Image 1: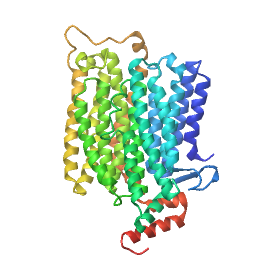
Image 2: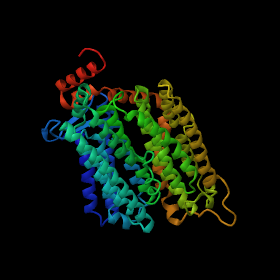
Image 3: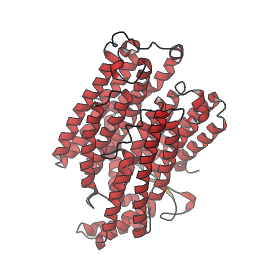
Image 4: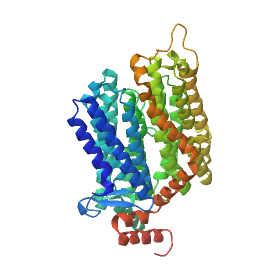
Length: 518
């Protein structure tokens, strides 16, 4: 079997087996974690293979644009590997955080189906199949959101589902316009068709469709002004589920924006990039101010997702080699850091007896290790040197300086300072200060004492990876530069998916548009 399909096959097979053994939580847990490890190994193999060139699988030997093509380039390889890593970490954490009732109700199968949908979204080269993968992960995420919950979770899930379905509706509207005009939804094929339309002066319909795609993907990514569903939902499920959501879900929308506005509608064409720059700045600013207004740990962290997405949208909008390299590094950094913050913050809330900061305190004395792990992730999120967040934000700032986008530079630096303030506020209020008078942090229960090491182990592992991003920032950024180069090499992607003739046609159209010779 082609290795490109193996992450998808491993995820769905694991989900099926977990469903079959759901009456035995112990067996189900072991199968689930083992399946996650297999997926991680396969994804690492694809990551290595992607360094030597774009990997393509034409499903059923039906060649694109007629058939379904799965494509793994350095960007998608990095993202599926991170998806598998976060899956293993969360499943490990869930060993003693998710009760047997939730496991029997489908926690493990749903997690693997969610990961299955994320893999597909990161590897597809076709807009319609992207829509299908969106729906797969949307259904799985909705089910996880309501799993074992009461009225609060159900209300959050309804908001989440309704607003994401609105995003899907805009996506379908855009696909209808694009297919009606182009007769294809394959991304590589569309790049050629739209380039021809711009040469002919008939690209207006694609500009309209691109605005609909900004709305559709922007809602799923959580950008301004479409982010209102996110802080209402991410803090309500179990810690394991909210960590998985925080690490992955908005990144699928961000990836879709990136792929669309580097390949299908490349920099220098249309108006979308200018709009994305404005939206990215507003998302950064309003996200960080929104976080300052919150008082619950996971709600604060959820709103900070919005702010961090703003940096990524700005990088997509700038779309220079440096900006896109910074984008890839930032994605690697934020997926790992944000998931870890939710895991550590969730455990802190369990120790403190609740999510509200003003009711917490003294957790650093109950568990110094947990306090240190949270602080490392918090400082990295804020972008304090020498942590990985500093490298990520510095790359975006340098790209903005290079593009003379000085308002963007000011916004990025200001938001970084406010993020540092917000993270230190959480750490001081929840971990360092004394507990409120007349109240002490909840001591660990016997279950916590027995399984405390299992709860901390995945957080320690991910923290080590966060520190590794800082220590090996140079080699990792070199990989990110390779990913950026391939993102801007539209002809190379088209050749890998459609063949050299179609790539030559695109290159000729691109040369003519720039006033050169084919």
